[in-house]
Length: 290
Image (cartoon, rainbow, N blue to C red; front, top):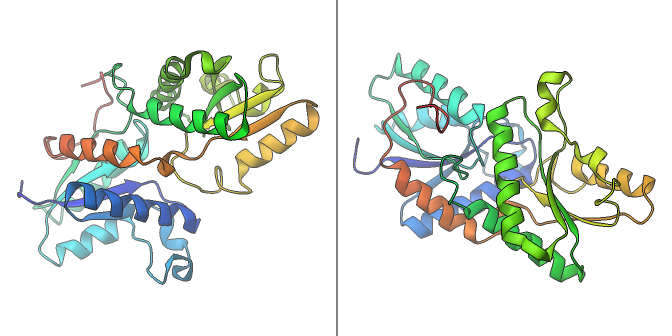
């Protein structure tokens, strides 16, 4: 490995400008923190955003970015995943693309840092700690007394990703303690079929039930704004519909993860760990599956 790999902060990508702008903001702050240039790059989607919404600078996605750096004789890269857990996008799709690119680019070397949540290290509560502070800020802002909390994620077809939701929810309950009445995980959506029941409860079904019928804070397991978590997105619609059918229910969404200053410090730690990782050779195993 070269002494100075090209560093990428990588998210999944979005069709919304706010998501790319958030990624750029965090990348800039992380660059200052580690004293090395960090490039904001999405896996997919973001190039569909009109550059006029991005200050005239087009978004970048992974493969074209890598190929452009090759023209500058760069062959070593470190990917810092801006993902909570073991997403197939970062730990299967990305390695597959790297292996295919290496067929015509044998010098290509890509390392992938650990994701933000480490299932195999239960004592690592960094993500839950940040989420807890965001929930506490909302409690104080709204003057709430021991509200219910649901940690809500997108929903997933993969049990490994769902385990992250449940793991963080358990940690969040410990972080918040008696400041809240209950913490329960939920998902925004799921696929049909009993094999995807692990996503339950869905947020729309949880809101309004006993324990979640009055003041409820949604702890948002979403990193940046997009069509799900942004203004006017799917989460906002679910909240509005739940409040309309359940008199007395009031819902409040915590700020999104990327807004918290502790995120940069967490990513800086993952950067240091990523430097020690072996280069991608095949699919990266999930924690505990090595």
